[in-house]
Length: 400
Image (cartoon, rainbow, N blue to C red):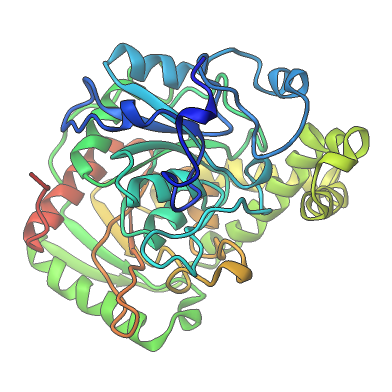
């Protein structure tokens, strides 16, 4: 095992790492073979300890993870990737942040709960990192740090060896500085039998701008720039339309919160009672909230999500790609927490693939704020392909 002493505090300027190896990080690759990667500290690795952002006994952590190494890590190793270390997570992938700062502005948060994964990539320590998302924990940090963040269709990637917080919602994610690295990792991680077989298909005909019911939460500049971006991107599609708010889709955000808290209380709530001195008040409060949803309330929310997923293509059609906000603002100040997953909740619940793209920057601060692209469930490959076409259209091609 490589100890955390191989990564000194002075090396880790942004608090992105729990432990890691600078010699491994030094390799700079454009393909997975020989590529150093970061692994969120809720994902089991055989050569680095996993702490899940806590001081819980290792025996407890091992029981939670169930494996010495997660399937996703093993698969990426077999493809030639090198695990450089474990990246900081918010406590148990929920809301109590670690000590990570945003490399683009050290007074600000990198988002959460995949804080260290985004910060490690933004800092240039690694170019690709594994993340997770149950609310907005991949898309939001990627957006705040000016990176690509990919949440695949629900069920696309194997979760064995990854901390379970909400089985109905939990999804593995990817954060990278280059879209091609996400495409390469996706080919590896989606090779296991999962949702369905993916095949190449023509790019979607129609771009859709979806403002959501919370559009007015956005700063006026963000609204204007997302609208301008939609108009500019529309020239790459046969059709363009603006979708009015869909109440049933928006209702999924509330169901996501109920299921997230309710299932977490069910699978991890015992930590608050048996190891209360080792978990935060923030975590305990989330467990308490979830316990209020036990029984019929939780069952109804799960059922609402399942029904919505069965009819997902009636919201986002297979011949469309949707453009929508990913975050409510640029990265918030550190003391304000890791940001609000407001614009991610319904998409996580719906189980559709989402990709944060680094295309918009605030004029006053120069900081990024997404937005995200959405396609229908199972259209992961096509989403990544259309994103590549969009980036080329915008003159934001891949780095050399």
